[in-house]
Every structure is written in C-alpha cells, then in structure tokens.
Image (cartoon, rainbow, N blue to C red; front, side, top):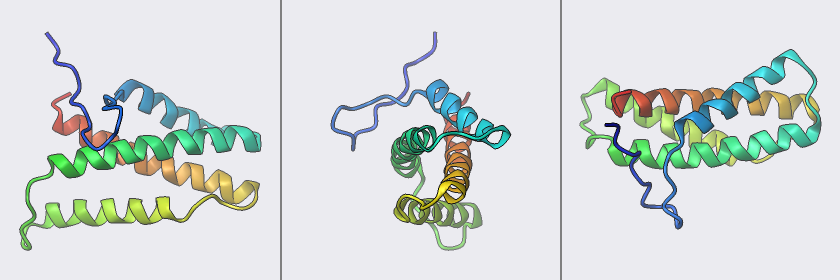
Length: 123
C-alpha cells in the first residue's frame, strides 16, 4: 500500500505534493519549444511552475540533512536551491522571447527539484 505524500507545513492549506501534476506542468512548459505559445499560455504555465517550485523548495529544504561544510553534495544542493530562489525572484519577463526562455528555465528548475524529491521519497 502506497503512503500518501507528506504535507508541506509552511503552506496555509497544507497542500500535498502532486508529483504527477507537477510533471504534467513541466512537460507542458518544455513542449512550448515546439510551437508558439500565446502570452496568456506562457503566463499561466509560469504561474503554475512558480507555485510548484515554492512547494518543492520547501519540501526539499525541510527534508535535507543538516549541512556540514565539508560535504560537497549538501553544499551543491543548498547552492542549487539558492539559485532557483534567485531565478524565481527575478520576476516576470518582458517580451515574448524572454518569457519563453524564463518558462523553460523555471521548468528545468522544477524538473531538478521534482527529481530530487521523488528520489528521496523512494519512487
């Protein structure tokens, strides 16, 4: 019997991580490379990705072991999480090409966090 996903305590509604929904959003965002999405489609997917990233960052950080300065993997993960936060803090892109690139980068960040989360969860 599969156990339900762990609740994310920092979210007010205590959402559960829906890995399949996140994966579908990532696929949708990466599929935009094969076409010309409308600005509305890009904005919608960007908003979804940002929400997924917030949930995943919270979960990954809470589950991370305490950092030791000499453990390279822990330092690399903390650095990547800080980079993702910085990328998210950049705000919305101006212009269609910049928005397209930003959505792609957010999708890759989300993909990395989802892979880390699912590997840790034993999927």
